[in-house]
Image 1 (cartoon, one colour):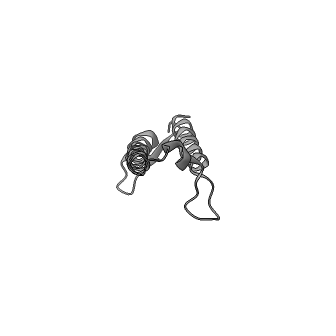
Image 2: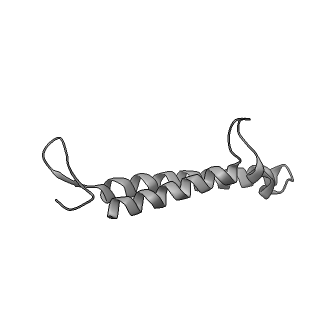
Length: 84
């Protein structure tokens, strides 16, 4: 069996790339929409949108820029791992 393939519960061969890429694409599209809304929010308040990148949603969280970096690296790493 080729790397990156699985046998599903029904015995059907499933490809990891075909499973991962749509999920990661949905995540990135959702985050893109959230960032657009955040940019509009900042503009509506007369603030620079870039200032939001340094903020944290909670004190024990990383800043937004670090969260976005984690998201990008996890998506790239999953895609590379799935393709072998």
